[in-house]
Image 1 (cartoon, chains in turn orange, cyan):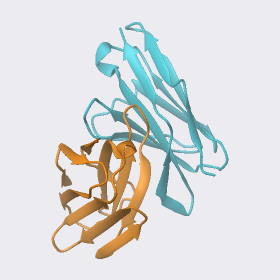
Image 2 (tube, rainbow over the protein chains, first blue to last red; image 1 turned 135 degrees about the vertical axis):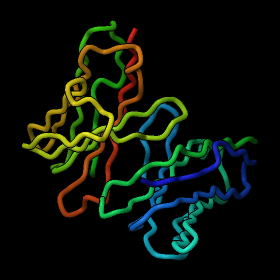
Image 3 (tube, rainbow over the protein chains, first blue to last red; image 1 turned 180 degrees about the horizontal axis):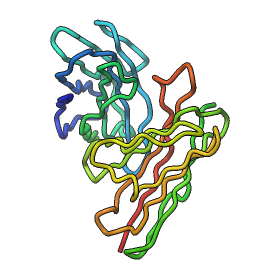
Length: 110
Length: 116
């Protein structure tokens, strides 16, 4: 099985930078996803990492270290609309279907 | 492109009744569709994977006779919650993927089910 751990909740100030961490334990790692999910809505795809390093996409960046079983999602220039749950999902063991973590609820305040 | 719709978006039903949820890929053919359930402040839990024209593959602990899945065409999958009980109240989300790009999932907007 897989063990995916992320903080339950984080708060940050509008305009600031926040880093959401995700650690995982799995065998046969084959990719890590980050999704954003607003309350009562479906998840939307943010990023996909399969190799070590940083992937930057606008205000959002995602980092992966396979040897440490660690990833983070970095959100810059926070906006109020960034208040949402951020889900880390890991794919492994030859399956193309990722397993989702519980998500980190981010609250952005003025 | 790659839009997935779900219907209904919200449903309230009495205990013991059955509820059908539809998942449609609007502008692409989905060879594989996935059904998830999400309880408040919990993770997305995969219930089953369905491929067009074949029986669904259910995850461990998911009752196949209670959660009936039909994937009759490349654009439509249905989930029927039979004899619903209050503990079935949850947020049900489907996603779809395309042959050759199964690593990419396109999620529907979800269906909120409340069983009284």
